[in-house]
Image 1 (cartoon, one colour):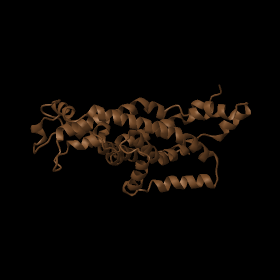
Image 2 (cartoon, helix red, strand yellow; image 1 turned 90 degrees about the vertical axis):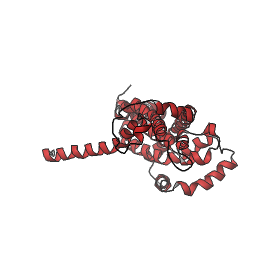
Image 3 (cartoon, helix red, strand yellow; image 1 turned 45 degrees about the horizontal axis):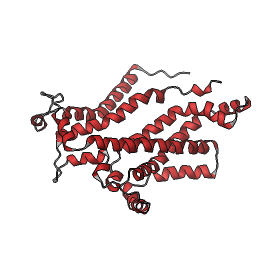
Image 4 (cartoon, one colour; image 1 turned 90 degrees about the horizontal axis):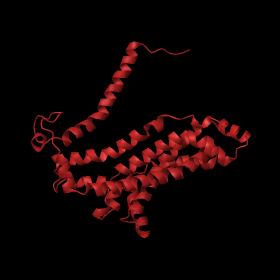
Length: 279
């Protein structure tokens, strides 16, 4: 028996959804507005949503004052590498944890939950000492390894849920048809896990792209600093922000994440049963 939602209840749901969307969109829209405002409008006592005299001067100043392209290249290298490595490691681990029930899987799940409770400040000193002994301080490779370890627990937790959602009967049917375990994983399980793998990679990428604290502590050379660290350079010695260029640089920093999500969002939401067809 299906449950029918009354019109007032449905209207309330849409209203709540609209309020939530406005709440999420407000900071980004205000950032875009600020990025195109000239200096007199930024200091106005009566700010407006739409700039009266839109200008690209803030973007020019941002590129002149800081090496944004180099920092963006460092961030892109670190984020893509960390996402790829995390997914490659987490996928087989998640499959074993989901299919093999036992003490080891339970302990691994407990480790995933506990590890997410550790604050950054608690681990930064021992992490710094370990990386120093490995000569990975001030190294993009060292930062990549930190991001992989930091994002791996949650990535593993996400993929375990996706693997458990794949019916084991499909793998059993493939085995009955004569497919080996490798053929079953490649032809049946992997296509079904593709949306989950893409979503996990997106999470790992965004986490590494936006991370600031580890990059600030571990990277000392200006030519190796990532974009979140470079954005802090728009703050003066007394904490006064160069608001226009800062907003322009922050707006540019959000574009890669939005672009990647726009490209792969169809992959996230579709194709869940692509591997259930015999080939």
